[in-house]
Image 1 (spheres, rainbow, N blue to C red):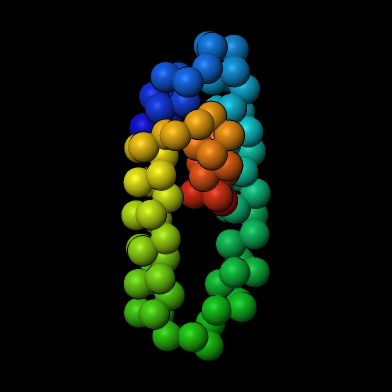
Image 2: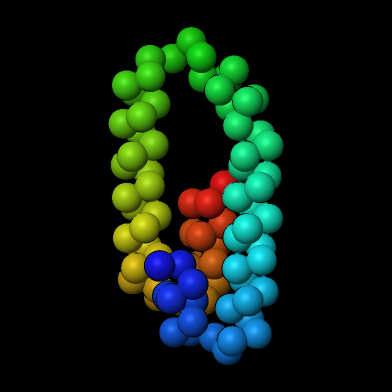
Length: 81
């Protein structure tokens, strides 16, 4: 969905570059997940899941609305992190 929405705003070269940044951010999130898991170990899992679900829905909504390239790109970076 991210690539489809970005492709409506910019050229093909910029879409591929954006996709590369998103994949890099996803990799960074994968590497940093153990630290996140250790930090939030004391909090209730239900609270963390609920907050995460609300944030994910909000970010996907922003990507779906795709007001500008920069907002869609930054939202995608946060979402994939």
